[in-house]
Length: 227
Image (tube, rainbow, N blue to C red):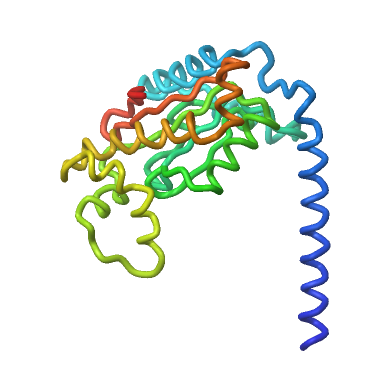
């Protein structure tokens, strides 16, 4: 049994080492132009996301056939997304679908309450610095369970309550109104991305990367930009 454990540990160390080496090699290329969706600006990237949301609401999705074509041809050897979306982990928020974007177009990070943790920030910085993202969208949604729980201050099992610390700034500003808390949280998390990451702030100033915040309405399907 001990030998098996040692063997598994060695394998894990090897995989971790290879992964780290690959990441370092990719990070070494940050100085070179990382051109995701060449020719896009922050404004055009945001415009493409919102145009996709209009197609989604109109029932005119175009991404599914393209997804199948990409899968069949196995042409995705590298990713070149043009935008990142930080969304809630809620299963009713299918990011690629509601923006009508196919495989490889959107770099998605998800966590309950769409909050910016150190891990999420690191992922967004990776997207901007290494993948060359042109836009970052923080996306909240109506009827958010995480926000509702934080507003009510409910006792929750396990480690769920660790989310509360990230949601409290918005909850305090909303004075018990869940709808306002959802909006306030988007505004707060968006400001956090803009101001707390020197890497992203530099990309905004020097490369025109757009950082915005929006709310997805579960009933209508519309995404409204509010920050």
